[in-house]
Each structure stands twice: as C-alpha cells, then as structure tokens.
Image (cartoon, rainbow, N blue to C red; front, side, top):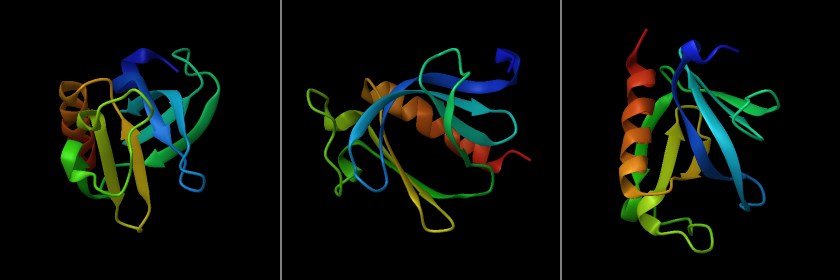
Length: 114
C-alpha cells in the first residue's frame, strides 16, 4: 500500500470497543475514506479498517470525552471519540491536543470528501 494513498497517518492509542483496554497502533486514513489500524508503520498487518467517509456523526476531543479515561500517563487533552452513524464509536488518544485537533480535522475532511 503506497503512502501516496494516505491522507493522514500516525501512531496513536486505540481503546477496544469490548474490553476498553488501550493499545498503541499505527493509524492510516486512506484516500478511499477508510481508517485502518496496524501493528506498526509498515501498515502491513492490518488489525481493522473502519469506513469514515459519510459515516461520521460527530467527533469529540479532549475534555468533551467524558465517558473514557486516557491511557496511563497520557493527558485527557489528546482524547478523541468518533461517533459513527451506525452507532459504533472509536476511542483514540493522540500524543497532544494539537495532534487530536489535526486528527479531528483530517477525519471530518475524509467524512465529507466524495
């Protein structure tokens, strides 16, 4: 998968939907409107992929994320909760608030771009 097909990528934490345990993953927001997460930046070993395009209801960041705690040693400022139209949610934690804002911007752009 060529990096030219990536809109945005980075190393973030992801909370599983069932156990809610935080795990460090490499994320790639692809030009096809999907967000994939992987074991590392080679993006070879895909754990999952979520449709973002036309599927995001809203995104909360930082202090707006009331229902989840950040990973140990991380600030609440980096939290993102992505609410999808079909009812599921993605919980992510970026390194900094600026990174969280950048992810929010990229995800909202991917959501609205045909």
